[in-house]
Structure formats: structure tokens, C-alpha cells
Length: 252
Ligand code: 13P
Image (cartoon, rainbow, N blue to C red; front, side, top):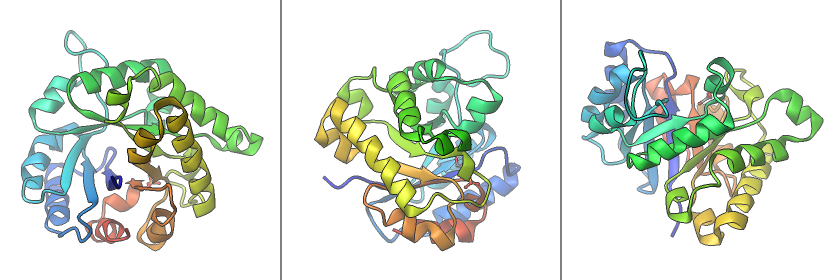
């Protein structure tokens, strides 16, 4: 089976409610040309319920939260549970974004707990991994990403792992305008797929969508998505403009 192509937007902490609804409507109104492409909108919590309603108009569009708590309920002021996310109809949760790792001290161990909680709620994680510039310059980026996957995902059994979407996001390419070259992206994606294959077998590895994130824009999406092991993108800045994101969706 051919794995899905995915164009996922990560809105981060952008768009007030009205602006977010308008953006979700504009993207949902776009007919996805390739039936093998899924569009995911990673909205702030405030927008989730309405985004799910809006997305019902287009079977190719799904909705993701950008985070969740690792526990299912309780006295954790300000936090959001997987049950809440599930109850409004979102299907995915972005986990382990480098901004969460850097600003909210999320580490591989905590992320393993979040992965379990998300899967137990019948939601699907979009698991982010990726190295900082110093690590790439030291030449240890492949080992670094392998460690992130091993410590946060590889405790799963095959059936659970098969629900995970991976997003490789080199930190040096996020919001910087510097994109990994198609060759750099392909090299890492191929390594990730090999690791998955070693752990879970070729069938699961070949069915796993591995997205690239970091300064994806209309001008470079086609070339990056054209790489054999790149199955789409997790897009920040360019997902905030309907026309740009639509061009990215049409880049497969
Ligand atoms: P940019 O596309 O703005 O570089 O952000 C990438 C990202 O962090 C997506 O999660």
C-alpha cells in the first residue's frame, strides 16, 4: 500500500478565533487534487472544535492539537487532556515539537508518556524529532534523532507504532528561512525509515509517513516532497497564509 502524503500546518500560537476560522474555511474549500494526500491543520486548542466542524466539508482535511498533557485528568491548571481533544473530534496531536522541548522542558521520557496517552485515547501522534545546529555541525545528527525515536517511540508494539506520523524538523531550519537541502532531508528520512524497518519490519516502515519541517514554502515544497522518503511537510509560517498553504498542498 502506498503511504499517505501529508501536508500538515502547525499554526503555533498564531491567529485569533475569527482569523483561525477564516483560515480553516479557506483551506477546507480547496479541493485536494491528489486523493492520496491528507491535509492536517494543527490549530490552537481554542480553535479545535470549530476547525473540526469546518473540516467536515472536506474528507481530506483532519485536525490536530499541538500538545496535550501526559495524564488523563486532574488538578493540572491550564492543561488540556487527550479526552478533551478527542471529544471535539480532532484526530491527531503534535508531540515533541522542538519549541515544546526547548521552552517547556519536554524530554524524550516525558514524550514517551505523552505518546502512550495519545494512542490510548485513539488519537494519532505526529511525533517531531530533529537536531540543533551544533549537533549537525558535530556530525552526530543521525545518532541524535535515532535516540529521540528509541526513547520516545520504540517501546510501542507494531500495531501502535503504525498509527504514528513522524516529522523530522531540524531546529536550525525552523522559522529561519534556511531549509534543509532535499539531499539532507532525504538522507535523514531514509535513516529514520531504516530504523523503523529494523525495529518493526519493512511493511510498517514503508507505510509510515515521514514529514519534513523547517521553512517549507511554495517555492521549495515540490523539490523536498519529491524525495523518495519525504512524504510531506509540517509547515509553520507558510501554513498561516491560505494561498501559500494551498500551493504546498498541491506540491505532491
Ligand atoms: P516554519 O515552517 O515556520 O519554519 O516552522 C516549521 C515548524 O516548526 C513546523 O512545526
